[in-house]
Image 1 (cartoon, rainbow, N blue to C red):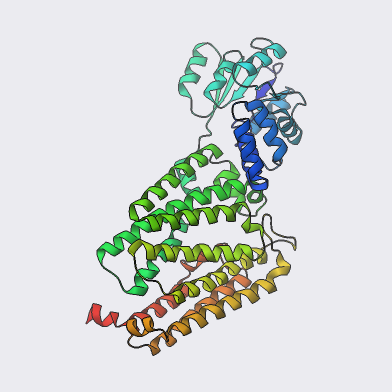
Image 2: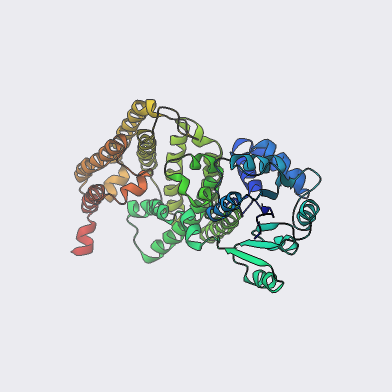
Length: 477
């Protein structure tokens, strides 16, 4: 490729490993969801205006947008050879200019303006008018870019398009290929399957009621699948709403969407499929179960959009989401759930919610509030106090439950329930202590399921409760 010809780079999906229109859309949903949805609906058929309006609602920080390193190196090499490196994009001109300034590229850019969407043939015409037929090399990443490659001298193809590459080479054009496709493994990571273990809480009503027949177990397992799909759909939404905050985070910047390893549009499609599956399975179980699934998704979405930024409200919401899992488990198999059980679950997860925030603020590098959160390191003392209040509330509720008629019927050796409170207290104390010391994972539930000492305490507690219920004698004689 000649030193005299400029190197023209597409932006979305080529120079950047993201799409700025989608970045603006999800940033807008986080800041002003009503206005964002209204704008998208009003200008959906006029992309040039839509891009400008979305950029006005929530313009992304161009210094944080993930860059395709192979394309960046190509641009640096061209600049070292004395060639002009120009951005040409269908994104809004203001955003394209900001990206060019951020990366030290040419101040001359080609981009969309209201009333003129610079894509495909329109972009090709603009570049030919500026540089002449075959007077530039062009890097793009979509089949629509073929209209530009046909009129460029050299082609840089980002992505897997062997037929287009072969056709261009047959015409005598010099073709450079850059592999930049997303993988199913990256998308699977965005679904966070390791978080599905939280849905084991749906088994609590079955265990508490001592129903262990195969039909009950199968129904609960299907409920767990529905909740897992619902949870993954919300994890996707949460990650898309938190793109900027994740990119500022010490470890979360490696998440699939924040890093650009998985395109935002792929995440949106996965969200739609997962939501449909969760609703379908939920409806097959029962109308009541489906209602709880939908409530869980609505509350989770509210948490992602707003509630997680509100001090203490976020922790109460997290505890409520865990409590809903227990309610769903009861509705799935149609068993009675004691109010004491629900009251016990809520303060327990208030404690674990505080542990989650304690871990985050303890590992923070300064005293400022965490991005997208309402807490900073100065709040460690308050979080610790609320965690102990939650622990006290859980233990008190458990103790009061031992005097109920249901406990009397289910646990003949009732005094052993008081013994079971000892490992329960030790487990909660361990979780709070490790969170305060910053020795936990950012998710206490995931940590708990990997913590051998903590799991030992939980198994001891369950063993004592099963013995108190006479289940060991029934199972093993």
